[in-house]
Length: 116
Length: 116
Image (cartoon, rainbow over all chains, first blue to last red):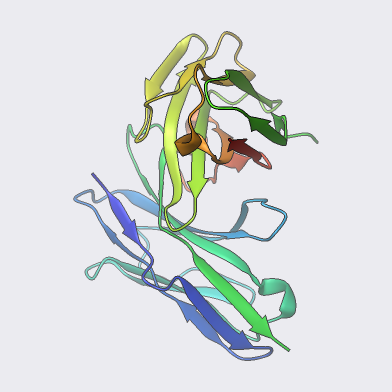
């Protein structure tokens, strides 16, 4: 079974600074997708960024980027120019390709605090 | 654009009581999922459905039953609630095509359930 590990229960960053959230996963699949979700206090699950395993290029979405190291099975999220609105719980998630029916496996989550 | 709607948003039950959580999606998605979120454990899959009339067990199915009589609805039932089922419950949906690609699942806003 696949597992996803987020080893940082809590992280903090100063406004305008950069922070990196860690995520590692374990799988024997070669076809899979990785996601970062943001969960603010409202409980909404908001997609931040996604990465296809077959793509070597790291995904980028505005201030959010990933460092995808396929051999090391690592998928970290970098938030640049942090804003107060970035404060939330962040989840890393894995989805196998093929006939997995789209099921997601989540990490434990990292609470991000942004200090003004 | 309703997306995925969960009912109710909050509920308190006594041990041994039963209840049903309702999930409705208006995107004509084939796949639907129920997750539970607990502190330090992320989201874990309870049950899922790949089509009307079909259901399957996820990672933590014990104590729950589900039904998918209509394509747009996915019900999660607790027959005899236990304090260990105190959690936040999320419903999600995905198209068949989306589940085999980088398309994210669409999540509801969650139901906070407390069992006393």
